[in-house]
Image (tube, rainbow, N blue to C red; front, side):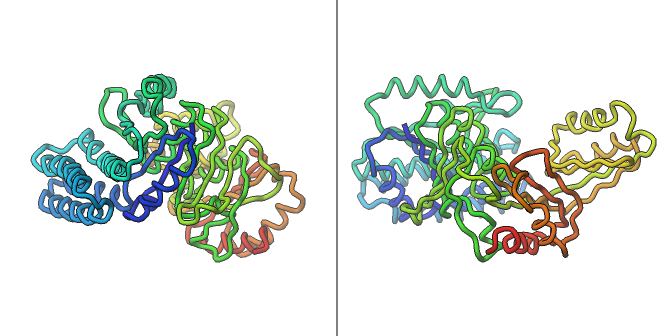
Amino acid sequence: MKIMKFGGTSVGKPERMHEVSRLITKDAESKIVVLSALSGTTNSLVAISDSLAKSDRVTAKQQIDTLETHYQNFISELVKTDAALAKAKAILTEHFEFLNIILKISFNEALNKDILAQGELLSTKLFSTFLEEQGIDHMYLPALDFMVIDEYDEPDLDTIKKKLSEILNANTDKKLFITQGYICRNAKGEVDNLKRGGSDYSASLIAAACNATVCEIWTDIDGMHNNDPRVVNKTVAIEQLSFDEAAELAYFGAKILHPTCIWPAQLAKVPVKLLNTMQPDAAGTTITSEAGSNGVKAVAAKDGITVINIKSSRMLLAYGFLRKVFEVFEKYRTSIDMITTSEVAVSVTIDNDTYLDEIIKELEPFGTVEAEKGQTIVSIVGNEISETKNLVQRLFTALADIPVRMVSYGGSKHNVSILIPGSYKTQTLQVINSGIFGL
């Protein structure tokens, strides 16, 4: 069983869906195809939800109508026969009637989740209609029938595996299944989601649940690159990464792969391939338990970082001080990315400032607390890079004109991270590309 996930740009135009149908029928291996919403749809649904949250039903109605027009134009090019077009129109009627009905309903978070689910439901139903028109045998597999999260919003892999196995075992005559990424049910049985980028997560969870031979993530770029091609002119694709290297890169900003995508595949030892729907014959990047080679492979940048500094000459060396600091972040379920300490201060970084004010208030009894937003973490990732000769020297030579705020080195064999002001991100990625990769 092969898992193939296609992102929003890969299904965002009728001709792209046509290409996806060719890719999924190139060989006879059984497949579960995971689709994102059409590109731009989730943003439109978020905007509709925001308007409803503000009780601005006039704007919401305009946004719904604009989105419906886009889909009407989409299906006119997706399918050709009268029967298929009628079915596609019925699908649009069903989902846009729902969006119009909610204009009359009091807005709440549960309704918000229902709104956001419409994108994946539309893309998969329309794609299934196209496959039916083409005479391609398949089964429509609703993710809401098996994809579940627990009361802590974490995937319940055991339940996912049980429910999915039951469905697959009851349909052994089928070799092709079409399902949604991103959407799921929560512990209450309500429609929910795996958050932004969750379609990658869905694919990896499905791969782990059915012990897939491979989990293919199809996007619009030919694999993981050594640097951000949107910022740096000369970048190269990486042929092979270990799960640990890929996890570091995804967590610290590589946009091609969602950070949560790695652990389910790693747990089940399912290889992950990052491939390009625009260049399907390109090698892409393969992620397995093996790194393939040692040394620096890539750099990634994570924006929106807040650094919190705690100065306390009286308490820092006291027994249990750091434990008390960490307990504050644990209380507010806020993860720490980097940490540095000295005799009189400790500095930490976070990427979620939702509870920043509460955290600062609870840290103030420990000493003087300062917080600064708008920072960026830049991570240099590779296998055994702590043993790479002259790496630190070359790195800081390249960074001579960059105001480095923090450094994390030695905690991982695969990562050297630095904290810089966000305004220096582009310059930093460019000088590292030259000084470390020679590009």
